[in-house]
Image (cartoon, rainbow, N blue to C red):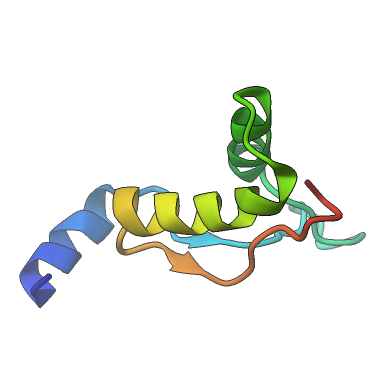
Length: 79
């Protein structure tokens, strides 16, 4: 993908990174956004083994949101 295409995609992509975030007041432990929880639960509902969900999240983000940075993926304990 060329730089021009990446720039155009980054203008339309609302998800800049995948990882835990803190609430607005910056207190407490970081947690997963609702978008990531949906990406964890949807494959489980459809019968995907819990050990494969991490790989599914990574490949989905790389294909659907190529300009989104993956800082952290949920562990098997979260799933």
